[in-house]
Image 1 (cartoon, helix red, strand yellow):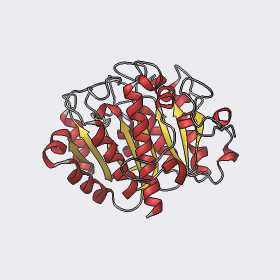
Image 2 (spheres, rainbow, N blue to C red):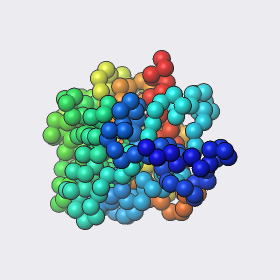
Image 3 (cartoon, rainbow, N blue to C red):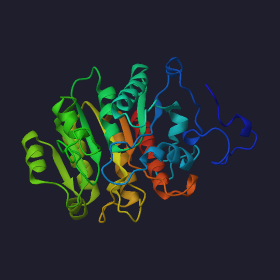
Length: 320
C-alpha cells in the first residue's frame, strides 16, 4: 500500500497539486488483498458515455480527489471520520471509453472487490448510470436493498431518447431487476419539467416515495429526513447523490443543472443524518463536471464534502 503523505510527514501538509493524487491523501492500493480490515474504500468511476446533456463527468473522480481536504475533526459533529475509520483509496475502475457495457462490468467488479473484502464502497462518479453497477455490487447476496437518492431527476425512465442504458434509467433498471426494493426507496429534491406522467404512475404503482423540492422547502429538511429514515427502516440501503440536486448557484459544474435546488449546507447535513441512521452498504456521488483545477472547483469541492459527511455519519453510527 502506498502512503502519498510519506514525503510530507515532517511538514504535516501536502499541497493538492503535488504528489500522488488520492482522496484526502489516503493510502492507495489496487490490490484486493490489502483491503482486509479496511472499513471504507473510495473507488473512482470516471465515465460519462451515457449522458444525454453535457459531458465531462469522466473528470469528476480526479477533480473530487484534488478538491478533497485532509483529515481533521468535523466542525459540528466533533468526530474525525478518517481517524475513527480505516479508509483507503482503491483507485479507479478500468473503464473503457466508448464501451459502456464493459465499463459497467469493470465498475461492478471493482466495487465487488471492496464488498467481498468486507469494506463499504464510496464511489466517485462519473455520470449517474454508474449507480447501476455500484448498487448491484453492493447488494450482491443481500437481496433487494433500500435506496436513498438525492437528485433533481428521478432517473426512473425506461429509456432516454430510445436508449435503455443511460444516466436517466439506472433506478428503473435496478427496481425492475429486483436489486432495489421499491417499498424502501426514497427520492429527495426532485424538481424540473422533464418528468412524464408515465414515470410518476410507474413509481406510485411500486410504492416509491418522492419528496419533491417544493415539499422540502415547505415542510423543512428535518421533517423530510425523519420520514426518509423511517420509511427506509431497518436493513441494508445504498445512498446515491447526484450533485444536480443542488441549486446551480452552489454546483454549476454538473450535466443537467436545474434552478431551485437545495443549498450545500442542507445536502451535507442530509447526507450525514442518513449515514448516521441507516445501515449503509455503499454510497456514490455523481455528475460532477469540473470547471477549474484542484481545490478551486466548487462543484468538486462540495462533492468531496458529501463524501466526508457520509464518512462522518458512518463513524457516528459505529460509535453510538
